Image 1 (cartoon, rainbow, N blue to C red):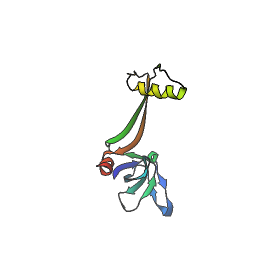
Image 2: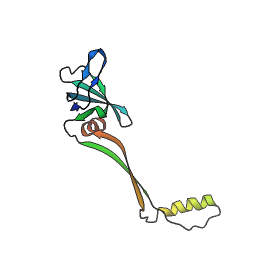
Image 3: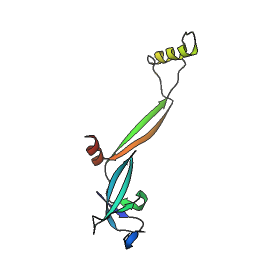
Length: 125
């Protein structure tokens, strides 16, 4: 669990509330596809938890994260082949492409999953 400060107070059922500026412990539950459910536990009652969103809290300390990044690049080259039809021409061109050197003209970067270092170690080591 990580310490965080409540940025915006919120009232809950049964007269319970989180006040702005209150320090809480945040428990992160992985719900798949890089998404997490956050539960805030007040320091005065660690057993009791409140559902919060990332916009409601600000973590007190920084943490190391491991982020999966995928790079997709584009480059094209015209390849001349002799074939009897278009399908064969495509197959021969793809075979020949493996022997050629391409220079990238454009690239795109996307992030995938994001894990804290501790979560990554627990899941993958």
